[in-house]
Length: 227
Ligand code: 0O2
Image (cartoon, rainbow, N blue to C red; front, side, top):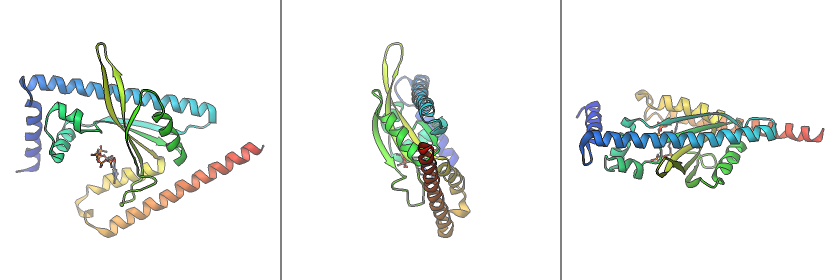
């Protein structure tokens, strides 16, 4: 079957699933998306507060920028189908950890661990999973610190514990990941070991530069403290 048609059919199946038909399912799906949106706002605020406090204490901003996204219905359905999970709204909650996603871009490598630890220690945050692709980079060179956390979202009549995927990386790691992401979908580059090796080598140069930049910052801090 043609790929786009197959996708369309999966989405139709998802939206028409469940007792009560399409409209009921659509309402339930929208409610769930509101929940993810609120969870993103809560976690984002937590990072903004940490950045304010740390910049006041250390006179520099550990966080350069924060972005967020909610996974599109197409990607949600595609991922559930790929995993072989049911195409239902309940299945989204049960099987997907990355519907709500936040990306935090830090200045230096040690800032990543500092803000990640500070978030993890907060009372209302439960850390479900950590993938440290900085200490253990992916084979292609990808580096980033990933956390799956649960945060309670308070509505008028209920508390909904909601999962959020957080990616924390330096400006340099983000530069590599963004460009690699753009290029990995190019058919002509697929299965080209020379291109993969070049990309990996760029990731290593970037990692070494990150480490040097952090070293420079530490030397300056030492000089400042001796004044
Ligand atoms: P998008 O559009 O960014 O959301 P899981 O989500 O746990 O089922 P996985 O692959 O085990 O899947 O999770 P992992 O390793 O934590 O990676 C999830 C996300 O990290 C990806 O989301 C990417 O955003 C990013 N990522 C992981 N590996 C790479 C990589 O090699 N290159 C780049 N540029 N980004 C990567 P999605 O779902 O792929 O897409």
